[in-house]
Structure formats: structure tokens, C-alpha cells
Image (cartoon, rainbow, N blue to C red; front, side, top):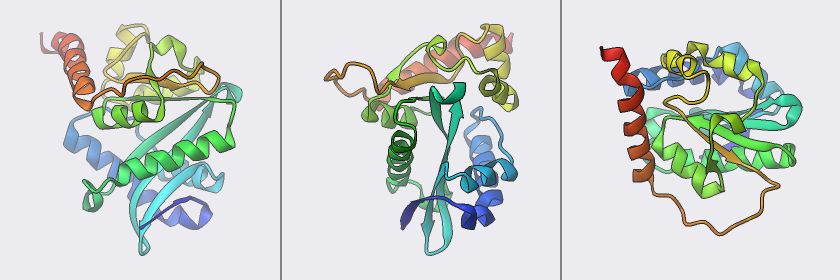
Length: 204
């Protein structure tokens, strides 16, 4: 298994990556902003993606997005092919793309919005902190990308203050404090609270 920075030689995997992301979101019933193979390919060409390969077979992927003229970057689209789940690959990809983000954009704040408790736990282990959306990028293009998510109505009716996703931020300039790691069950509880708060209105 190799986890490497993607380049244009990996464009042939773009369609499989998008299909895997879409099918995973459907199975889990979670919201996710859709991306096209062309968009994924552009990330590979620019060296802003990480791909995991098992003897030439696509196993996992994640990419970097730059926002606010480079003040913020996001690690997005983290996905592991069903054949390789439960083996710790997501954590390896997450670490690789985080390190790549820090090396390529050393002064940028790295943020994430996700509904996945496992991803939140990985973020927490890397030094991210849960934050309100107001501390994330105000780049309208980023938020426009949420329009293809099935939970977009939640984001709009809260005036973009919150959603089912949880915002998390790594600030390279923040004072480093020793913080007790957050357990995954805490993030699962947070997700349930948000679902009860926001989705109950849709059932009326």
C-alpha cells in the first residue's frame, strides 16, 4: 500500500474516486458536496491531493482546497474504498494530506467541516479544535460548494451559523496547549444532538 501526493498520472482514478464518494454518502445517508472527475483531476494536476494505491488499485483519496487568498486551506473529500475500510487507511491518508497542507501552506489555518465522528476524532488528534462557522473562511465560493449537499437547507435557515457538520480548525499560530484528546463517542453524541435539533423540523 502506498499513500502518495497525487499528480497528473493519477487522473485515470478520478471517476472512480467520485463514484466512491457518492455511493458512500448514499449508503451512510449523510450530506456531502458532490465533486466532478474534472475537479478532482485539477487537484491532482496542481499537487493538491493525496491518493492511496494498492498495486495500482485505487484504495483511498483526499484533496486540499485553498480559500481566502491562502489564509485558509481545507482537507476535503476523504474517502476509502469499501475493500480497504477498517484497516486504518483513512488515518494514514488524513495524516499525509495534513502534513502536505502544512508544508505547502505553512501559514494557513487548516479547517474541516464534517458529519463523521471518526474524521472529527482524527482531526482532534492532529490538533484541530471545534469552532463556530464564523471562525472558518468567509470565502463565498467555499460555502457555495455546499449547495449540492442534502443538508444545505439547514445551513441556509441558520444563516450559515451552523449545520449538521461540525467545524474544526487547526491554527498554526495559536498558543500550543496540552489538551486531553476528545473521544469519538463525544463526537457521535454531538452528531445525534444536531440531528435531533435540525432534522425534527423536516419531519413536521
